[in-house]
Length: 85
Image (cartoon, rainbow, N blue to C red; front, side, top):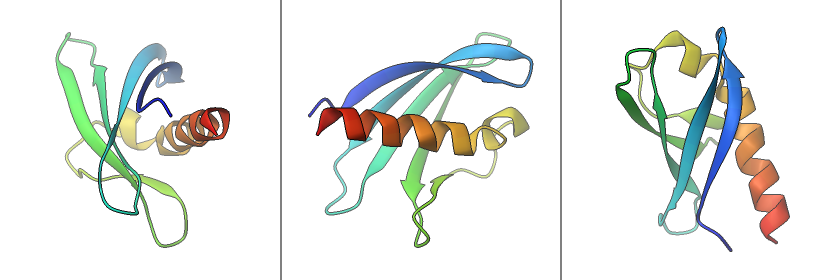
């Protein structure tokens, strides 16, 4: 199974390239995600699956456009996982 992939996702008013890298974390899946903001700064954060089975961002100090994209980012991970099986 491939542990890294990229996906173009529209969030806010822009389409951005999110890069996902699966991290080893025992039985749980966790992903390191990076994306470039409007000023060219790379934003790095983790996503994990919570007890309810929803993908969540691990960092609280992220721009709102990343938090607003949580569902779409989680869908991208699930789609990748289903294609890799």
